[in-house]
Length: 607
Image 1 (cartoon, one colour):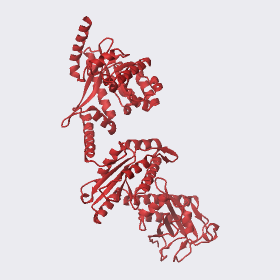
Image 2: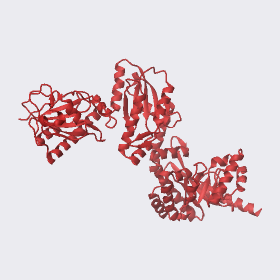
Image 3: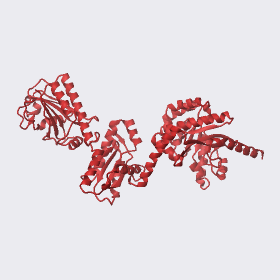
Image 4: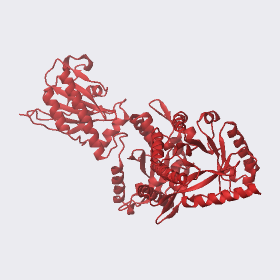
């Protein structure tokens, strides 16, 4: 007859030196009454396959869960002897064939307390979390000595220990604990807030710590793996906990985010203490032997606990931490205006995704580029425009920046490429001899861009020699080797490549010289200031001479006045672009502008 009993009890000696802090935190969270989903089933399988009457899951923190397959044993044992507990902490398989004859344990009994019979055989297998953390051991015991465990029995014990580890972490996660840092998670955070309200508290400061922007944290994982990111989160948590006031709990409320409820008056902020926390977090971390600096953001929110129901204070304080990541100070107090801006950005991102699908709100305008030697318009730059049905015209730098952050840039570039080449084909069939220039971002510069260009050109029957891609100087320098290879493949198609915004990216001139680019566009921020600043004029003149010397065709952007145009005529430039030449215009307006421009050009020559 097989029966069972299970329960939990304290283990003497479980708080000895050398126990990993992580294990202690897990024991603290689980407590004496911890539950392990499926433990009885796992223990029953182990007892059956190994033919043992007693199975025990031991945590190094000082708790244990017992299973007895012996229906005649009246009482569960009180505890394992401390010497056997220490053996389970070694993270190694332990097999004691005969306890009374094993010199390692000096004849110490396996069990302490009122157990009715002495155990003679003991074996244990370490239990690990899914992240590889050693959290305890699964132990099996018998009344009689044995010769040991054969290979099949060892495999059965290992499998049972793995199942126990999975159940252990599942129980802690579903309850209150994050499985990586072993900190209480978001559910526990809100439970504790509600408990404060029941205790009569009315206001509190909430703090949120963002480890890094989502895209950068994702880059950590792609480059170093999940184990590295997990270790980073544990290290960040440790630094925050050292800084936190005594008796303050830290919660993990997101993949890369922590939160806490701070003590003290909700009407004051200790700026010095906040600066200290940011300073701590900005110091490099040594994770698995590899140093890393993060981009932390610390947010603060003064919360009216009485208004907890129906609100989301965690979202609000996260809004502040998100804003803080972009600030020099590194910490920020929640501001409703910042929150509204972020909500508006989210709204626009979803609207932009819809606009890219239905193609009714987006349009392209085209800005001419004029050759200085002939005065002829030789190219137009395609510029995306968005006319929102309720918000009106959305500024390009605003929605393009959102597209970058939201991962929509490749879709937007694809739409511009398809729409622009379709228009170029129509112009060419109408007899207009023009090149089309299109901006691409760093997210576009992948191997499939070559195929996308080739397919779009074939679809619209346009020669790729009539297309030019504009890539910012910063993008070119971001991934020099990979970028150079992709651009070389694009140049092999006959597509021109322009280095855009030159002068703003702190160029490595050797890298720039080796880039397979055909033209260089001097950034308009220097050009627009030429009227008022002789220094900017000298900078533009020097950059133009340098670019010409490197073999690039030089385009000057931002030519917005007659005076700037006259200054540029005296420089080593090939083309100009700007409001003095023409503003961006709809495709239907371009043929008329070209006709007027050519008529004026011929009159000047005739005069």
